[in-house]
Amino acid sequence: MQPKSNIVHLPVYKPGKSTDEVKKEFGLEKIIKLASNENPYGFSNNVKEALMTEFENTNIYPDGASTKLTEKLSEFYDVSPDQLIFGAGSDEVILMISRAYLVKGDETIMATPTFPQYKHNAEVEGAVCIEIPLKEGTHDLNEMLSRITENTKIIWVCCPNNPTGTINHHEEVKSFLAKVPSDVLVVFDEAYAEYNEQNEFPDSLLLLKQFKNFVVLRTFSKIYGLASLRIGYGIGHPDVIQTINQVREPFNTSRYAQTAALTAIEDQEFIKDCREKNKIGLSYLTNQFNRMGLSYYPAYGNFVMVDVKQSAEQVFQGLMQKGIIVRGGHQLGFPTSLRVTIGSQEQNEEFIEVLETVLKEII
Ligand SMILES: *Cc1c(COP(=O)(O)O)cnc(C)c1O
Image (cartoon, rainbow, N blue to C red):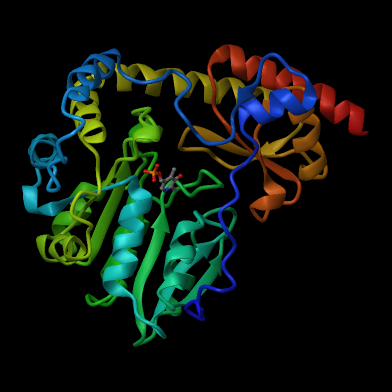
């Protein structure tokens, strides 16, 4: 059997060690996982009850069009229902966009390092990835513009960027969009948008009104705390959403995911509370990093990229042996940095304490 030539080089996604594996390997009782930017406060209390009710309908296919959820979000964002598309996580929306727009030989522009799924899905379609190095941890939008050719189909912008946590500001994004040819799609991945505190984020909903070739991606996996249910969405011009819908599988999001999302969006108190706690956690961590003389990128999501000035791999291993799992920068293009999720206050304090011990042990 002969697989598609453009996929033979692709690695199978390797998740980090699970908490159970780490417990077993190092004989630990308790693990603090700050590796996947999950919500340390769980999810809205109302979700559990809604899921129990939905349980009764397990034998019935979900509504493939996510009608109720579409209505709810269209009110929430004041966009029309035909501007929304749902996927099994925003990961699947990235897949559908790639499937709908990219063929062999097309070019697609993205930052590096950034969220790996843009490149992965583009390569599955045989597209050529033009990767533009970050400038001080941030997307270099001017350089991205200068690399547009007549073969360019999609430009991916991750804001805040995973793994650095940095953003591009509204005016910068707006003037970028004004210069991108109208037949090039700009995908704006805002998986952490709800953590926005300072109103420094680009107003993507406003930009959607001005640019038809602009699609915003959001998810219920991060602040909403529904990562295991797999549901995310895209907001864009009806024509673009229609195109993406043409490649969508009929029942791509489950009843549980739709119900949980519908319930979760109604509990904005929970979201506000998580946002406030995250802000306190971020300032705790950055104060500690300052005290320890460690530098970090300005963080706008629920994670921070901190330069520990030692081999990331060694520090990562040292932390793991003591029960703390983070993402080592060695796997992300930052050999002396760690990407750490902002946890609960207790988790953050323990992380700092263990990090100090590990750093001393290495020296
Ligand atoms: C976590 C994340 C996503 C995907 O999340 P889903 O669980 O697939 O919705 C997308 N983009 C970025 C930048 C992320 O960090």
